[in-house]
Length: 416
Image 1 (tube, rainbow, N blue to C red):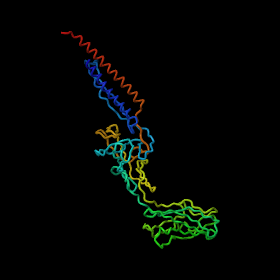
Image 2 (cartoon, helix red, strand yellow):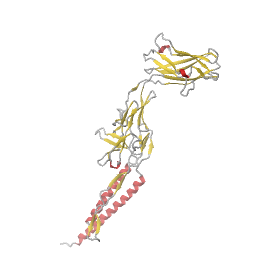
Image 3 (cartoon, rainbow, N blue to C red):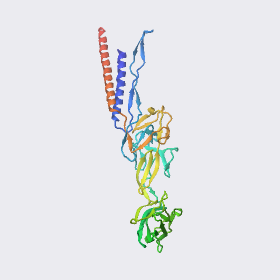
Image 4 (tube, one colour):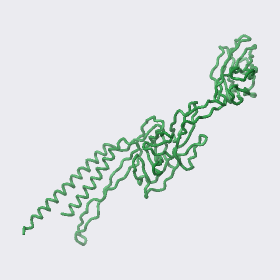
């Protein structure tokens, strides 16, 4: 009777643990990046009854259950969170505990910025990667905490090139004028309006004069920056200045705000060789005007992009890569141990971990604006729960029956 009690008790313990595992799976049904855990039962060694070829064996029960984490791909859910990211494929994000400096791993990419500009997980762990230098990250170097330089100013970039698309009315009378304004930026980020004044001087002939407001210049300085002539053929195509002399140089030697001297290349021809100034029998008009200067700007937003690039957007319209997320390739992820906050740590059984960029070395792709859902299937878990419950009830019945038989056996002994 006693072996039966021991066997049944081992079954109760094993099924109780299995029910705990199912309960944990169901509790993490909506946990980002959670991987479903399955249970494996193993029998214990048998006891031989008798000797020889016909010796019987009786089992000693069920051993300690084993758990296995199934690292299958979870569904990706779009969140549009600027710093949310998911891994499509194998691999883990690399994070560091601020309290122990221990390197941890996670599939949960619900990142955010803390008060100091550090990119952190929901549990406050520092996200690891490679800071960018001049907009380029080196994924071959050592990883470190990724942070955003909050409050820094992106310096102004002075205008060095400009272009305007203009049509001049071929039916204009001699002396008719048309003006095209262009906004340019000096080295201090100040905007100045240059005005290109076109004046008809005859058939297919115009002059131009580029002016700057007197208030933008030191006292007594000439507001005329450069002048020239333009001629067109019978089809309205620009003849002179010819493309061989393009671009025209506009110089501003001094500015009232103390900014550096400016030298602007005014391109009269596009990259394909077509002139940006035409003469047709239509009203004179300005199309688009372009220039490459930008004013100073501060960080107005931060976002993760495909591949794990961390990009800062500035108020002046510039976007600059400030870092890249690191990814870990782990050959046997089942050996990782959970430490809470959706983080995992390597164990003695974990193979060599390789850290590199997304989509390299067998690592998956980092998808921005999405999160990976839990792989727990509710229907499967409820089916397992029912099976473990029935097994537990059966083991309980064995204990009850064994106890009854034991009592009957004790009652066979005569009272002394």
